Each structure stands twice: as C-alpha cells, then as structure tokens.
Amino acid sequence: MNIGFDATNILGHGGIKTYARELIRGLAEEYSDDSFILLSTFSDSKKRNLEELFENLPNITVRKAVPHRNMLGNGLSFITKFLSGILWRLSSRKLDIVHLTDPFGSPVLPRKFVATVHDLFPITLDEFKGSELGRFYLRRTPGILNKARAIITPSFYVYKSLQEYFPESSCPVIPVPEAASDEFHPRSRNGEILKPYGLDEHPYFIFVGRVDPRKNISGLIEAYMELPEGIRSGNLLALVLSGRPQDLEEFRNRYGHLLNGNGIVYLRDVPQKDLYHLYSSALAFVFPTLDEGFGLPVLEAMQSGCPVIASDLSCLPEIAGEAAILVDPRNSTALMKSMVLLAQSPGKREEYIRKGLEQASCFSWARAARETMEVYRSVI
Image 1: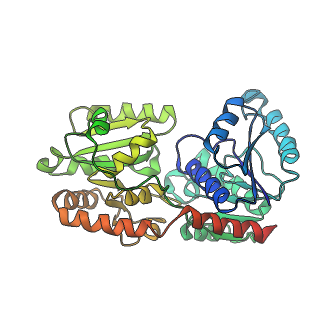
Image 2 (image 1 turned 45 degrees about the vertical axis):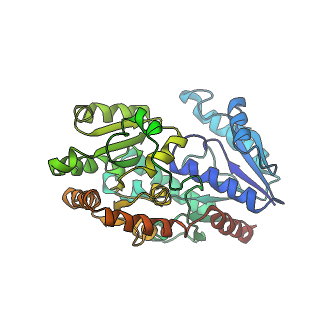
Image 3 (image 1 turned 90 degrees about the vertical axis):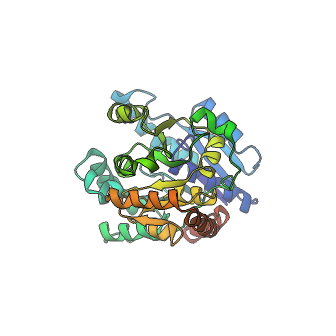
C-alpha cells in the first residue's frame, strides 16, 4: 500500500508531533513492503530534516506538496488555502489513504483520509468554552467526522467524548493507544548532565509540558509552595516548559518572583537527550493536568523509572492504571500530600517505580503501528 501523511508540522516538541514521528517510524519498521509518503511544505530545509530523521528507513519518502500556510501572508491566506486544496489532491491522488495525525492543524482535508483526534479539551473544558479555540473545534470537528473514512483516538476517553458531543456522526472511531519511545528507560544519575540545569545537588520533582491552562501549572506551583518548609527547602521543582513564545513570556511575568530562591527551576529548550536523564533522576513526575487525550509524559516518566503523581481526570486513570498516585488536580492540598509521601518514603517510591515500569511495558509503538494498519486496511 501507499500511505500518505500530512508532514507539514511534525518536527519539534509536542505530544502530537511526537506521536506522528513515532507512528510513522513504527509503521515503516513493521511493514517494510509498504510505502509511506510524507507530504510536506515546499521548504527545502524541512524536507531535508525529515529525510534525515527517517534516513534508515528506505520505504519512507518525503514529497514537497503544499505551500506554507503563511506563504502569502495573512491577508491572502484564502489564496494559499485554495492552492493547498488543489495541490493536496494532486499529491495524494495515487495514494491509497492519507493519515492526518493533526486534523485540526492540517491545511486542508484530503478526499481519502483517516484522522487522529487526540483530544477535545477546547470543547470539554469549561475554561475554553466560548473561546476562539473552542469555537474553532466546534466548527472543524463535524467536518472531520463527516469526511474521514475513520477516526483514530489515543484513548477510550476521547472515543467516549466524541460519542457524547457528536452522537449524530456515523464515522467509525477506533481507539489505538500510544506509547513512549524506547529511548526512555532508567538511567544512572549523571551529575554532569544535571549540573547545567541546577539539579545536581538536590532531589527534585519534575513537570514536563506546554504552558497551557489545561496543564494546571499554577495548581502545581501552589501545591509545591504548600509543602512543609523542611521538605520544600530540600527538594526542588523543575518545570520543563515548551509552548508559544508569548505564553512562555506571560508565564515568566506571572511567576518570575518565585523562580529565584524559592526552589522552582524554570527550564525550556531542553534537548531530548537530556530530558531522558531529567526524568530518570527525578524524585517524582507530577502531572496535575485538567484534560488529556492520552498523557504521553506519564508513560515517558514511568518507562524512565520515575514514580508518577497524576490527575485523576480524563484519560489518565485509563493510561496510568494503579501504577501512579492519582489525585484531584484542583485540590492543591491533596497534591501536596502526595508529593510529601514520595519525598519521605523511599519504599513508596520504589513501589511506584516498579509498578510504572510494568504499566509502561503494556504499551508499544509496534502495537500501535499494527492496530493503525488494521484501520487503514478496513477503509481501503
């Protein structure tokens, strides 16, 4: 088969981009007789980066297919979109199916496609209702459901959310769980790697994610500041953050007074090779998010041998099972007490490290690739 992918935005940080790269790699490794075509923008540098990323997989090819969405500027974006529609059809006419791994960010919906809907938080969370993003999701989701041959979701939680909010849709919806990359595994503490981040001398809790209201970073900071002085003074909180420059700047403006001398370490642009060590050496990974479609960082931490404290909302009980301490993310005191437990009890830490490694082993990209291929075959 010839399977196409929207590869216009799969480089860089972010769970959806990681999903696209790992899935494409898993499919190419599992199905060496099939061809996987990455449809990218006209950018030579992006094409080169994609080719380098998958250079050891000869059944992956990169094709310059569409202009960048801002090629003609915002004022002429309608012309760019029109051209993209024509070029998408030309680029995908000989493909058996196109997979949109981020249908809300794709420049256009092709004629024959399956799509992965990772989450619906702009619709399900009160914090986003009435927002521009919420209105966009309400407009775009019915179109995706009406035109797609099938929808893939990373969890049963998103599957059920689609059924609840769009009960009139007849599009097949199939949950296919994600996984952490094999690069995440327990590592010995390496002071030389931790030192530049200021994490070599003290134990630390860690959070990894975007600056986004649903990540509830403010709740995590509140819980950390509630820790008893004897515990907070000996344990840092490392915030490994990504996101839009304006969101990161707003975070710095809001919490800058806490980032110097209060135990909170602000980190951004952490290379992936260092992130493996930051996970492995942490006292615990704390993830008090309000809504997730899968929560990939939870599995990344578990697979790294890092105990997990996570939200008890959305998909996280489904993904974490009994291998994490699950708490109400809006209850800062409950969150704080869970942090105290792991800071004071080496036995509990070891218990959750063992449980986490067992839970993470239930997920793999090879399994995700096989189940995704079954979706392709079912609609072709």
